[in-house]
Image (cartoon, helix red, strand yellow):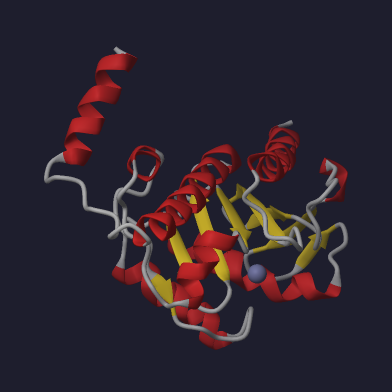
Length: 217
Ligand SMILES: [Zn+2]
Protein backbone atom coordinates (compact mmCIF):
# COMPACT_ATOMS: atom_id res chain seq x y z
CA UNK A 1 0.00 0.00 0.00
CA UNK A 2 2.74 2.36 1.03
CA UNK A 3 4.77 1.62 -2.09
CA UNK A 4 1.67 2.36 -4.20
CA UNK A 5 1.36 5.75 -2.52
CA UNK A 6 5.03 6.50 -3.16
CA UNK A 7 4.76 5.41 -6.79
CA UNK A 8 1.73 7.64 -7.31
CA UNK A 9 3.53 10.52 -5.59
CA UNK A 10 6.50 10.10 -7.91
CA UNK A 11 4.34 10.06 -11.03
CA UNK A 12 2.45 13.14 -9.84
CA UNK A 13 5.71 15.00 -9.05
CA UNK A 14 7.00 14.18 -12.56
CA UNK A 15 3.79 15.47 -14.11
CA UNK A 16 4.02 18.70 -12.13
CA UNK A 17 7.56 19.37 -13.37
CA UNK A 18 6.15 19.57 -16.91
CA UNK A 19 3.17 21.60 -15.76
CA UNK A 20 5.48 24.08 -13.98
CA UNK A 21 7.50 24.54 -17.17
CA UNK A 22 10.86 23.72 -15.58
CA UNK A 23 11.89 20.99 -18.01
CA UNK A 24 14.54 21.33 -20.70
CA UNK A 25 13.51 20.83 -24.34
CA UNK A 26 14.48 17.17 -24.20
CA UNK A 27 12.15 16.52 -21.25
CA UNK A 28 15.02 14.69 -19.58
CA UNK A 29 14.56 13.88 -15.91
CA UNK A 30 14.80 11.05 -13.47
CA UNK A 31 13.04 10.76 -10.15
CA UNK A 32 13.22 8.27 -7.30
CA UNK A 33 11.54 7.58 -3.97
CA UNK A 34 12.93 5.50 -1.13
CA UNK A 35 10.83 2.46 -0.26
CA UNK A 36 12.68 1.36 2.87
CA UNK A 37 16.25 1.31 4.12
CA UNK A 38 17.83 -0.19 1.03
CA UNK A 39 15.39 -0.07 -1.90
CA UNK A 40 13.99 2.75 -3.98
CA UNK A 41 11.62 3.31 -6.90
CA UNK A 42 13.24 4.82 -10.00
CA UNK A 43 11.81 6.21 -13.23
CA UNK A 44 12.63 3.86 -16.11
CA UNK A 45 14.53 6.30 -18.38
CA UNK A 46 11.69 8.61 -19.36
CA UNK A 47 9.17 10.69 -17.44
CA UNK A 48 6.84 12.12 -20.08
CA UNK A 49 3.57 10.21 -19.86
CA UNK A 50 4.94 8.03 -17.04
CA UNK A 51 2.59 5.57 -15.27
CA UNK A 52 3.17 4.14 -11.78
CA UNK A 53 3.48 0.52 -12.99
CA UNK A 54 6.45 1.54 -15.19
CA UNK A 55 8.65 2.46 -12.20
CA UNK A 56 11.54 0.11 -11.46
CA UNK A 57 12.60 -1.05 -8.00
CA UNK A 58 16.32 -0.79 -7.38
CA UNK A 59 18.56 -1.71 -4.45
CA UNK A 60 20.97 0.78 -2.87
CA UNK A 61 23.68 -1.63 -4.03
CA UNK A 62 22.66 -0.81 -7.62
CA UNK A 63 20.84 -4.03 -8.44
CA UNK A 64 17.62 -3.92 -10.45
CA UNK A 65 15.10 -5.81 -8.29
CA UNK A 66 11.87 -5.36 -10.23
CA UNK A 67 10.69 -3.81 -13.48
CA UNK A 68 12.75 -2.61 -16.43
CA UNK A 69 15.20 0.22 -16.96
CA UNK A 70 16.41 1.60 -20.26
CA UNK A 71 20.11 0.82 -20.55
CA UNK A 72 21.16 4.47 -20.00
CA UNK A 73 19.24 4.50 -16.73
CA UNK A 74 21.63 2.06 -15.11
CA UNK A 75 24.18 4.93 -15.12
CA UNK A 76 21.96 7.13 -13.00
CA UNK A 77 21.27 4.55 -10.27
CA UNK A 78 24.44 5.48 -8.39
CA UNK A 79 23.62 9.20 -8.66
CA UNK A 80 20.48 8.46 -6.62
CA UNK A 81 21.83 5.77 -4.30
CA UNK A 82 24.74 8.00 -3.25
CA UNK A 83 22.31 10.61 -1.94
CA UNK A 84 20.17 8.00 -0.12
CA UNK A 85 23.29 6.59 1.53
CA UNK A 86 24.59 10.00 2.59
CA UNK A 87 21.23 11.30 3.81
CA UNK A 88 19.15 8.71 5.68
CA UNK A 89 16.27 11.19 6.04
CA UNK A 90 15.93 11.82 2.29
CA UNK A 91 12.80 10.17 0.87
CA UNK A 92 12.88 11.32 -2.75
CA UNK A 93 15.27 12.71 -5.38
CA UNK A 94 14.63 14.63 -8.59
CA UNK A 95 17.14 15.26 -11.37
CA UNK A 96 16.51 17.55 -14.35
CA UNK A 97 18.34 19.68 -16.89
CA UNK A 98 16.16 22.70 -16.06
CA UNK A 99 17.60 25.49 -18.26
CA UNK A 100 18.29 28.34 -15.82
CA UNK A 101 19.71 26.12 -13.08
CA UNK A 102 21.78 24.28 -15.69
CA UNK A 103 23.20 27.65 -16.83
CA UNK A 104 24.66 28.00 -13.32
CA UNK A 105 25.91 24.40 -13.47
CA UNK A 106 27.59 25.03 -16.83
CA UNK A 107 29.14 28.27 -15.54
CA UNK A 108 30.32 26.43 -12.38
CA UNK A 109 28.59 29.09 -10.34
CA UNK A 110 26.84 28.20 -7.07
CA UNK A 111 23.27 29.52 -6.99
CA UNK A 112 22.79 31.94 -4.07
CA UNK A 113 19.61 31.94 -1.98
CA UNK A 114 18.17 35.35 -2.77
CA UNK A 115 14.48 34.63 -3.42
CA UNK A 116 11.50 33.94 -1.15
CA UNK A 117 10.69 30.53 -2.72
CA UNK A 118 14.21 29.18 -2.09
CA UNK A 119 14.15 30.52 1.45
CA UNK A 120 10.73 28.99 2.13
CA UNK A 121 10.85 25.68 0.31
CA UNK A 122 13.96 24.13 1.79
CA UNK A 123 17.12 25.75 0.47
CA UNK A 124 17.98 28.75 2.68
CA UNK A 125 21.60 28.57 1.51
CA UNK A 126 23.41 28.59 -1.82
CA UNK A 127 23.22 25.50 -4.06
CA UNK A 128 26.81 24.19 -4.37
CA UNK A 129 28.42 22.87 -7.55
CA UNK A 130 29.69 19.27 -7.80
CA UNK A 131 32.73 18.96 -10.12
CA UNK A 132 32.05 17.29 -13.46
CA UNK A 133 32.48 13.58 -14.02
CA UNK A 134 30.83 11.25 -16.55
CA UNK A 135 27.30 10.48 -15.41
CA UNK A 136 27.28 7.68 -12.84
CA UNK A 137 31.10 7.40 -12.87
CA UNK A 138 33.15 7.02 -9.70
CA UNK A 139 34.41 10.59 -10.12
CA UNK A 140 30.90 11.98 -10.37
CA UNK A 141 29.51 9.90 -7.51
CA UNK A 142 32.45 10.67 -5.23
CA UNK A 143 32.02 14.35 -6.08
CA UNK A 144 28.39 14.26 -4.97
CA UNK A 145 29.28 12.42 -1.75
CA UNK A 146 32.08 14.92 -0.99
CA UNK A 147 29.83 17.95 -1.43
CA UNK A 148 27.05 16.39 0.68
CA UNK A 149 29.58 15.79 3.43
CA UNK A 150 30.93 19.33 3.27
CA UNK A 151 27.44 20.83 3.06
CA UNK A 152 25.36 18.79 5.52
CA UNK A 153 22.24 20.98 5.24
CA UNK A 154 22.01 21.51 1.47
CA UNK A 155 18.94 19.96 -0.21
CA UNK A 156 20.25 20.39 -3.74
CA UNK A 157 23.45 20.34 -5.79
CA UNK A 158 24.31 21.62 -9.25
CA UNK A 159 26.13 19.00 -11.33
CA UNK A 160 28.83 20.87 -13.27
CA UNK A 161 28.27 20.87 -17.05
CA UNK A 162 25.17 18.75 -16.53
CA UNK A 163 22.13 19.77 -14.46
CA UNK A 164 20.40 19.85 -11.10
CA UNK A 165 19.85 17.27 -8.35
CA UNK A 166 17.31 18.04 -5.61
CA UNK A 167 16.22 15.91 -2.66
CA UNK A 168 13.63 16.09 0.11
CA UNK A 169 11.43 14.13 2.47
CA UNK A 170 9.08 13.09 -0.37
CA UNK A 171 8.62 13.55 -4.12
CA UNK A 172 6.22 16.48 -3.75
CA UNK A 173 8.66 18.42 -1.54
CA UNK A 174 11.65 17.67 -3.78
CA UNK A 175 9.67 18.69 -6.88
CA UNK A 176 8.47 21.89 -5.25
CA UNK A 177 12.03 22.81 -4.25
CA UNK A 178 13.27 22.05 -7.75
CA UNK A 179 10.71 24.47 -9.19
CA UNK A 180 11.75 27.12 -6.62
CA UNK A 181 15.42 26.67 -7.56
CA UNK A 182 14.78 26.86 -11.30
CA UNK A 183 12.64 29.96 -10.81
CA UNK A 184 15.35 31.53 -8.64
CA UNK A 185 18.07 30.74 -11.18
CA UNK A 186 16.01 32.45 -13.89
CA UNK A 187 15.49 35.48 -11.69
CA UNK A 188 19.22 35.69 -10.91
CA UNK A 189 20.03 35.69 -14.63
CA UNK A 190 17.42 38.38 -15.32
CA UNK A 191 18.64 40.53 -12.40
CA UNK A 192 22.22 40.28 -13.69
CA UNK A 193 21.15 42.47 -16.62
CA UNK A 194 20.07 45.30 -14.31
CA UNK A 195 22.91 45.37 -11.83
CA UNK A 196 22.61 41.98 -10.15
CA UNK A 197 20.52 40.35 -7.43
CA UNK A 198 21.02 41.53 -3.85
CA UNK A 199 21.35 39.34 -0.75
CA UNK A 200 18.59 39.12 1.86
CA UNK A 201 19.24 41.22 4.95
CA UNK A 202 20.63 39.32 7.95
CA UNK A 203 17.91 37.46 9.87
CA UNK A 204 15.68 36.89 6.81
CA UNK A 205 15.41 33.14 7.36
CA UNK A 206 14.44 33.59 11.01
CA UNK A 207 11.81 36.17 9.98
CA UNK A 208 10.33 33.78 7.39
CA UNK A 209 10.28 30.91 9.92
CA UNK A 210 8.48 33.11 12.45
CA UNK A 211 5.98 34.17 9.80
CA UNK A 212 5.31 30.53 8.77
CA UNK A 213 4.88 29.53 12.42
CA UNK A 214 2.34 32.35 12.93
CA UNK A 215 0.27 31.21 9.93
CA UNK A 216 0.43 27.56 11.02
CA UNK A 217 -0.64 28.21 14.60
ZN1 LIG B 1 21.12 14.40 -16.47
